[in-house]
Length: 325
Image (cartoon, rainbow, N blue to C red):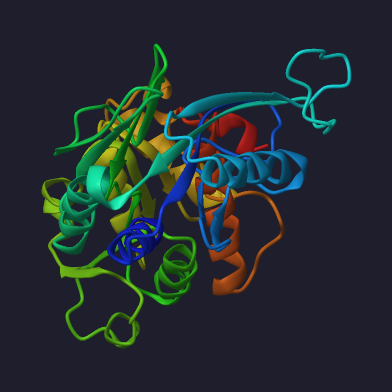
């Protein structure tokens, strides 16, 4: 969002600028899909496409485009391997990037930029479409997910949210809300205790809901941008919540608890018709193994696992047997 408001401000000053967007990345590379920066005709820079040699080379090219009044967008491919001849970047991290350099000016582009910023302000999604021949915006999400690059056309949904749904508003829920907000996630927290002190103290959650746990499935959305954490205050609640949510189509479903507790819950659910295949989609005990003990440490462990799932861009099944050994 911030980069679009910066672009809007510079265009309102009638400054020309170049928008640099990583439209595709493969392997280990400094810039990920969606990374952006701008270079203005007065030499200002904002944002990053990953740093290093690639950013240095392409920002210099952006400056040249502005100095020479080049208005035609360019697609640059950077290959970070020493055995590459044509598109060698000078880096050795062995990945690849494609970056579009798109010159913007007030007369041609301010309407699109105003529309993008306007939708973001009212928290509505809008899709930006960029290629070497066009820069357009269209209200709503017209792609699945946040980014897409096909046939030379890059699309991004501005206003797309990665949403963490935390079922349990206790100390772990409080710490995890803070951690996930810091990482840029939209946080929803659910509990069945209206007088809970830690829920009242939670200033980081975007939404707080008092619900009946036996109706929890009504409140949890589905989608590849949804990450669900079960961390209620009792074994029975966790089991019942998991049973309600296990068939949800979400990117991540994790449950907090010791190995013994998880095994007992899984055994109980299997005896009530839940299959082992269904349970393979549950990360439990939740989080990466860092011997976490305090709520903030547990929050870091859970956040790390969610980040791993998000950045892989697909749900990697967590085979519970591995975690119960």
